[in-house]
Length: 196
Length: 230
Image 1 (spheres, rainbow over the protein chains, first blue to last red):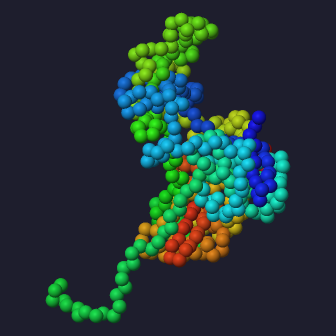
Image 2 (spheres, rainbow over the protein chains, first blue to last red):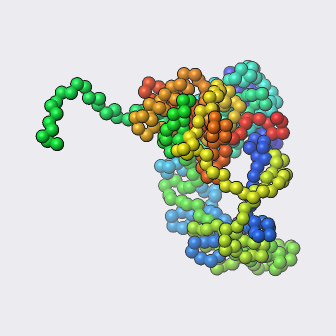
Image 3 (cartoon, each protein chain N blue to C red):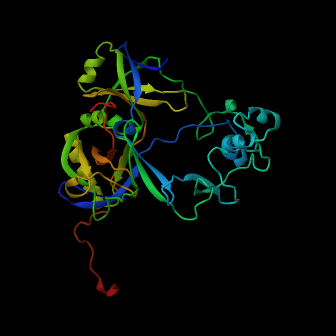
């Protein structure tokens, strides 16, 4: 069964189906291919810097290894932060009601967008539909699938429908003036040209 | 660095950096160093086409009986740095850079046309700064109509550019609007910031707090709308 987005505003739930939206589905796309002198498509391969094996797609795999060179099975791997501490896995939020919080255009604008979904309302609860129509922007936790980095989605509405814009939070740095050079007041010393 | 011009056409070259989310958790083991390694899983003789040619359409029994897909001289070798190359159907590696074509696909994925690839050049530089178009949009309307897929944080490099950018930020903060930025005369062209880069519409947002400011150039190449509907 396809996942549903369930959000709650003042304790009243609304439920949506979701459809991913991307630029290719709106406008089409341009795909670049390499061709030979006859116009036939060429295959992209890799050649090691050291060695002479030509690597074509299908010849490689990837796995995790520890410092002793032993393979680590996937089910033994956990999420680890930059300090080496374990990070809890965050489950998918699909089908689980997430609380909505009123937020600002600035918060949405500064998030790093990772995905956009068009939401089709199965059930609009309470004041949510009116709030969105009035231009409200609301945020909620959103993880399409389980992972280690909880994402923030923003619920908005425009003339085309309701959308969830999924972002990862960023940190902006306020710019301040650099150390100010002291401004000289009245000339309080003699100009001594003998020293020049 | 980025060149921009304000509403009076006064231009400056300022510092610019992409606003990105901090790197999150990665997969590993607590207290142990782990690394994700690419390695050779088979030689060319282990690929589907080769196995089919050697053992027939249904080669499953051959795989079970003899492991013909495993080349012990190759399997398990770590892959280090590699270079990209191109191979023709004959198996011959090209010794020179190939020609490139752009295949244009419509929104359904169907091919529409093919044309020689052209590497677009950046249209923002010291001589041709990103310019204010004079058109403003309320911030709330911008974020509800467009996907702001990239953001560049602008910052000053000296006292003069501090005054310049602070003035811009104050102007935009006071109105609560974003200024639409573009390239070329009147800002009519989309912004192309790097060679081969995407075309974007720019939306400049400013915030101030005392003597501090934030000036963000949000870039968008996508409207918020439903596929298949105008």
